[in-house]
Length: 116
Image 1 (cartoon, rainbow, N blue to C red):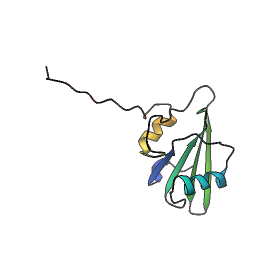
Image 2: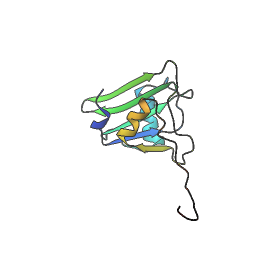
Image 3: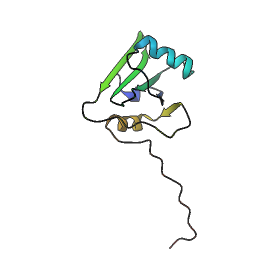
């Protein structure tokens, strides 16, 4: 697989996907649900319900490529409380996700009366 840093955009499909789908089925999701250009210099990222499998779809100069990663003893951190169905993620953050680090947790706003 190419380095994720070779792509202009990385898009995560927030909702779980039946990963029995291969290139054709995932391409339909990208085009119809995510409303994105399949032939752009982008990566499209999908995860299953159990968050143990991830598929990454992209188009290179000659055709589509599909990458699969399966975890044996853990789960991928995945966005939960996001309004967007399609999430644009930075390559650095996605690299952390592949390492098991949850980049989806948002800090809550802090309100204070005065500074000590």
